[in-house]
Length: 342
Image 1 (cartoon, rainbow, N blue to C red):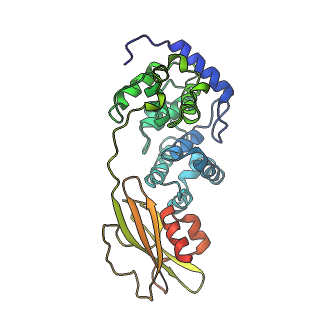
Image 2: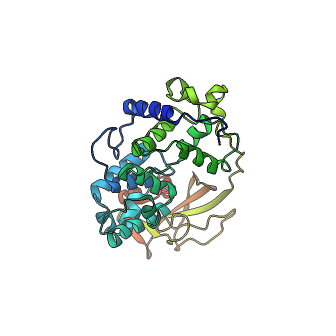
Image 3: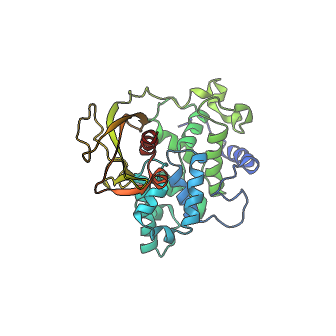
């Protein structure tokens, strides 16, 4: 914690004044000063989508979801397969399953109305501390402490925190909590996020544009980009596998539904071997298989090389037109399909 008093009123005033002028225009956001509160469904959906991805990548998915399922009850009534297909390309597919579980809990147990407190939101399936705080502050005006990666970086620099992450996270959260007040809690949370995303960037921070340099320990020390301190990451392990692209005479490809549990659980995919150091398995059906090259993909915890093999044949699969498959498959399988189609 800081050893000198924190000028909370001045920090808040400077950042909120900056936000009133520089707030990003986002599909799910009400502009600063808008009367009334945003739809909790849209806030929740956007926050789930934005985990582990960027705003430009998430935005078309958000627009597609809200056009197709405009309310949480509409989403709750959707078929699992439709939602999983619409999610394809956003990654971290357990989030899509949690999304449905939460929507169905809101629709079935709360009459289609989101709980209006952080504690109530946290009790919903698949809703973690960050999402509960974000929805509570932005949609319901609760003075919740909203801390994501952007906020952690701002706090680490503002207070020149010397503890490396992830060990520093409780300290960074406590520091962020020092600045939370009942006044404009949703705008405050979004202002911190915007500052981290556009000015207090991971690399090459734009300190000349920052409203908080007067109080920033990292800036005063001349090395704001040094923070947050990070321990060296362990080398990502590598795996390999085989993806089989089987086509019929009607312009369709053979897909399978992956098991609900595990990586890419519940998603459509090409038939594949296990992903180990040296896969050696039989193909899904007897056919004249031929090699079609390799694709590379990086997951959070390992990198993957998939050898693509193609053939024509028949079998008990989910036979899907090529264009539909390209739209529905997760990125790794879309890469393999595109490679196999040549």
